[in-house]
Amino acid sequence: MDFFSEFFQAITNMSATSLAQHVVNGVSLGSLYALIAIGYTMVYGILLMINFAHGDIVMMACYFAFFGITVFHIPWYFTFIGVIIATALLGAVIERTAYRPLRDAPKNSVLISAIGASFLLENLANYLFSGRPLRFPDIPLLSSNIEVGDVQIQAICIVIPIMTFLSLWLLLHIVNHTKIGMAMRAVSKDYEIARVMGINIDRVISITFIIGSALAAIGAFMWGVRYPGITPMLGVMPGLKCFIAAVIGGIGNIKGAVIGGFILGLGEVFIVAFFPQLSGYRDAFAFIVLIIILFYKPTGLLGEKTTEKV
Amino acid sequence: MLKVENLVVAYGGIEALKGVSLEVPEGKIVTLIGANGAGKSTLLRSIMGLVKPKSGRIEYDGKELIGLNSQKIVQNGITLVPEGRRVFVNLTVLENLKIGAYMRQDTEGIERDIKRIYEMFPRLEERSWQMAGTLSGGEQQMLAVGRALMCRPRVLMMDEPSLGLAPLVIKDIFNIIQEINHQGMTVLLIEQNANMALKIADKAYVLETGKLTMEGTGQELLENPDIKAAYLGKKKK
Image 1 (cartoon, rainbow over the protein chains, first blue to last red):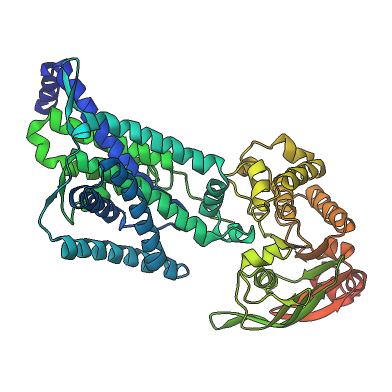
Image 2 (image 1 turned 90 degrees about the vertical axis):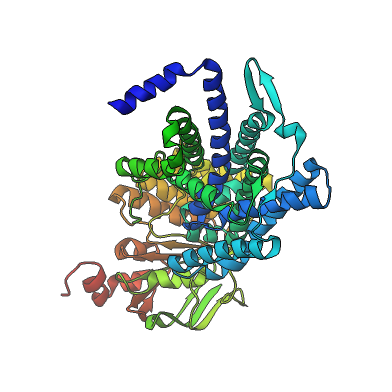
């Protein structure tokens, strides 16, 4: 097996420093995927629909950050908070205008509406900001390199996992220990009975979109610092991969989305590191993993078996 | 207390209820019996605001309910124990009770009511932290009743509470219904188990393919030869 001997050679030739470097890169990419994947999984859990516009929400968040810092010269930390708020509102507006009017329509209609919302955002961005790539504002504190031992690490690569961990902790706290979280879990299981309990379904769904979009905004901001080119199509590939991450983990399951995100992030970085000649296939990796995992576990790693309701 | 007048409900072009009128007086147990597909659940769903009737009136304490959303209807004091129990299987027993009180703000009152329900169903207290999905059918039915009581309703509507339960458990459930009623609750009970339902009912209606065909006290219907033949499995003599 030529392939595997190359693989082992690659590992044995690799110094501890570069291995550490790859792990750090993989963890930070995985964290970003996880943050965005949560948005897909939460919306699916409650509405049983795939919010195709989610990746484009990420893209819009990057533009918001660009306008805040580069155009309006607002300090980056205030911009960061502003981006989260603006993106959360954008998510709520999309839900309100593209999905809520179709609440009682067949699922396919909502799916088509989601694709429409996605195209609308992409073309709107193209129209408003032009297709010319913009540079995400440089934040020296985050983008500079720091040295840990022999390893050179961009500061953002340490910030990303920490922010992801904090966001995730907060999210799980909201979902598991607050009244609105309880309502979300109830709505995701039985829509109609939740209504009979007096839960305002529309409000719960709005809040789900707000939370999902806020997480996407956090991810987008850090994504921009790490990969600074902004284009209207920026959200497409990450959106697709994060959707795959959510499916791999078992769509509807928050922890599953995080696990899926890390599998894809680490896998992608390692593939490029260990098999440089395969680096052209890095985007294909997500799809291959998806096919393999769905082949053995059709509901994803942590997905529940769906049983017919009696 | 609750009055339905000439209610017509249609799914697509098919009428599930073709002009139903009935009355649920305060403090009584009213039961509605009928075969599968007669439109019993549709009636409850219309009262709960889950289905929009084509015409007719649903009056509660002199107020029109049609057009109100479920939230408002729950706030007015009507609640439903749904067919097949439908407890939230991914929530704990305690959370299921708390979600029944979702509209209420009085934390202390909620705590007190949870205690009261645990006294009524000690088995639920033992399983307080278990996911509701791990309970047995009978326990889930108790939880569904407890959950409904948590919103402090004045009218409790129950859809087929005996469905899929063992005879002994069914007896328990019916005892509980009677006990709740003695404490002053108005009950609208839908059942296929006509025998049990008629025995505890103050007033009973028979629904057949969208129309009421008979009404009377529970006792009257129990002794009616047609009912005996059709619903109680006894031959006409």
